[in-house]
Image (cartoon, rainbow, N blue to C red; front, side, top):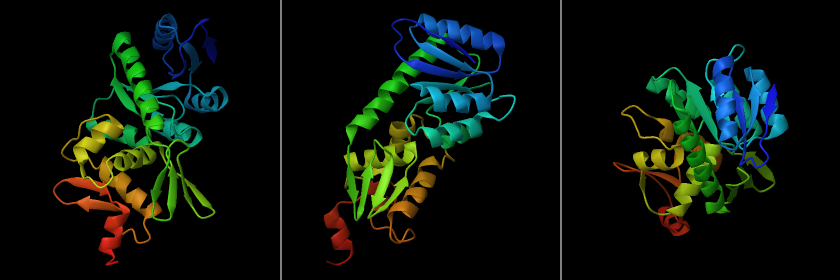
Length: 245
């Protein structure tokens, strides 16, 4: 593990990359841009560094010598729900991109890429993530209290952790509570990608959230499907009307 520093570093970036020449070039370029860079050569080392150094952003190669980037991403997400993760790969298949995003990555850059593009994505994603964290501070759904910043769901004395995307999706639906949002709009605002014809990312996340939120997930009262449109988080008055109160 190597660490490079600049006196006025803007943020700490963890680079998980096993290719020596690519890693050296990225470390030098990111340092030149003002970032402090922590370099890990393996997946396990990357997870350890994420735990130890608490980076502001992670640049993660998909193909690593010990464990793949998907597993590393999941392990880092278990440690830190909010750190932005940009995945690097030579693969351009949509299924790999979807798998990476489902594992918790925030963005996906296909090799070869320019350092200017990568730095621009790092800046944009850090702004976007910070904006999501600051936007909504508390969400009440039935007897559940959600803290999007802490990524927690509290029901009575029970506290359950939410994934980064689960918390972000709920914050978005809360912002437009009572109004339906399309799958395309949700995917773009929360995941930062455009929907493909077979993309089930939003639907899968809704299913997971219903299991955590709804008394009867198969008959949801709060996270409703709006047929032909997408999903909405209903207001309390709508819940009462649906129950005939």
